[in-house]
Image 1 (cartoon, rainbow, N blue to C red):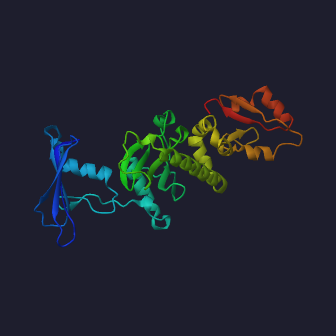
Image 2 (image 1 turned 180 degrees about the horizontal axis):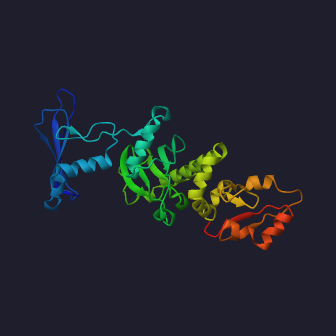
Image 3 (image 1 turned 180 degrees about the vertical axis):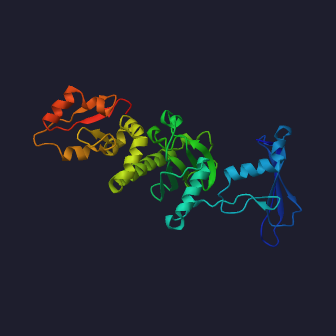
Length: 320
């Protein structure tokens, strides 16, 4: 793509091995000839096109290595200086990674200084193989809330970056999730433009979505206060998921929270399961009331009727 000609010279480690050189100008033809090459190993020489001389720049080479090969398990050097120096913490056991390392890695990939709200680190071996390190940001702006797709997942194959800002690994309503996914099943030569056509991506998406929803359910059950904060920030997106992800509709339904007329204030939300558990004997209906604010809703005459009869109702302002 960037060269007029490429030469590959290689020699086996065996003592009496001969050296060979493969060369091609990229037109479908190539030449293989014996050469005098004393050292073992392989050398690739790229003869750059005139308009690609930027790749002679040391700074340009280093930036490419850091972007695409930063996590390779062997050193990549420029003028004897090792450029890739960051370990792929997502391939390590969770017991080997310190909390501070999780935070620092998040700041690195998010290009910010804010600590994450929550992280999820796991690996899957069957029926597909991949590693994942996902983060829930502490907060998000309108550029995420009103976006159409997820774009903060980096896709790796065997620790080599394939695509930044992948939009096919999570459904749209989980677009707030940030992190990396690395699969050894994904071929290194997959086209970055055709990643979405790879059948493996859809399988990873289904698995990732399920793991994120299970993590949220665990958070809701084990740390209601923390989940309450999550809901205040991302509840709108989960409601979006209920109307779009029919496969996971029941899981999403259990994650929904609404304020109730018998809650102490507007900051206390309840789940559908909680509401049903305290329904009066003989109550067959669940009532929903919307309005500009909790105070405005509770002053409506209809709300008074529910209270007089001892019936709780869900209340929600129109923005939710």
